[in-house]
Image 1 (cartoon, protein in one colour):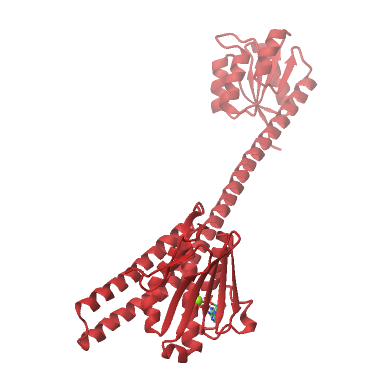
Image 2: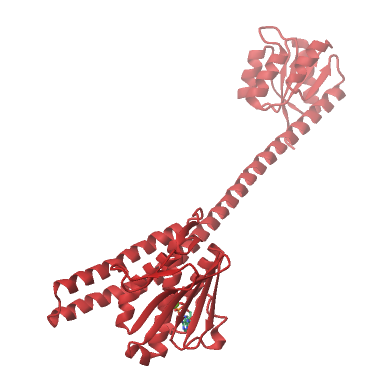
Length: 405
Ligand SMILES: Nc1ncnc2c1ncn2[C@@H]1O[C@H](COP(=O)(O)OP(=O)(O)OP(=O)(O)O)[C@@H](O)[C@H]1O
Ligand SMILES: [Mg+2]
């Protein structure tokens, strides 16, 4: 172990020297002997003392206690007080400097040595403890930082997941109207080439195309809203919502030989003669109202109608060719619930698939289907609107039943 160096602060020359001799005999080094507080602070700052022996009563402006206080603040060197007076007030003041020892003059050399050894040991341990605390604090900070990072990543991931879901949903809902727009444009070209492109044709085509584009734009808004968690349910008219979707696909389905009808079977329903705007489908009043998300509900209806049209085109091409493809939507009530039944004549769903339809990515359309449509529909109806959606087979094809409160 290397020699410890000690600074002696003592204004009585003889005492100072005898302490020095004693220290040297005990195997310590003495960095300096100083007689005033100022000098002591100076030495503590610039010298290499491991410990200070401090007389309490010093000549000059600062006494030993003040000096010890200053050393404690600047230099992290342990101090042992030496004094010939025991005085309660003095002792109390001395305590405030947290001294490492307190020796009454005259003292035995043995006591001096024990005090010095204990002080150095305690000071070492204090330093180690401080270091430990510091690194502990640092590690706690690091760990907190790490766990924050993890939380952030998790939030980011779940955001990405719902973004992915959203993009998937939008892509899915865009496919149909995108096809429709392409068809309208091709149709216009053919009409132009055959000289059928008159003003009426043009206006209708533009209107139909804009309808599809509006729908596509709404889809983005709907889903952006939908994935914001704070979205509120609000009441809406079921009949109108369904009619809006039927309008969107009516012409397109008609061209593919498929007719869509809407009828109402609740006691107070009165069918109105079709007006100019809604000439294609019947109107019933009063309308049925439910609480929920209107736009998402429309997405569900669109999914079911498109699936039905697909089924007719794939499995009952003869009917489509004869313009006898048929999709019928029936609105009714059961107690407090609204029931929407959508039937088609597309041949139905193979029994084995009935309980798989709503699973994510279940599709029988190979690369042409994603299998998201019905899964998304189930989430919207059951998780978000508290209703139920079911699939079954009817006489001529599939029957999808939605029940909402
Ligand atoms: N009306 C229906 N008649 C017969 N089968 C249907 C009908 N509706 C859905 N299905 C079956 O349910 C499967 C899943 O439908 P879903 O809408 O989830 O996905 P998809 O239509 O295959 O793909 P996507 O919707 O991405 O185009 C379809 O592949 C089809 O086999
Ligand atoms: Mg589908």
